[in-house]
Length: 124
Image (cartoon, rainbow, N blue to C red; front, side):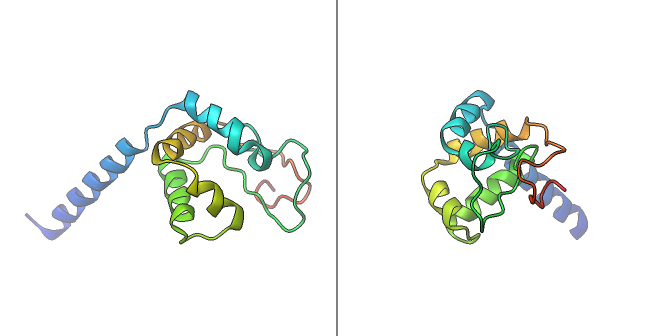
């Protein structure tokens, strides 16, 4: 077997495992999002629906993110390899199952075409 076929098969197996591990419970993710994410990211991940913005923070919209991307991002916050004071603290309090459930919820939410904040660079 050629090296490229072996590399492709290894990639496919790793990808399949990551997809299988990313399946979370959408309903549980919604409940958790309403408890822990709503203030900054809003109930659907499109912003905080007019609550006061912290002047120095840019809060990204997280709706519509692919589950593996969301899970990897939260894992990086949890491990401290991606730095944000608030997200590092929040992620440490979440189990792997919580993160999968949040990923499932936010993946089902359509991204908004309008920003909650006038200067939100993620929606312009």
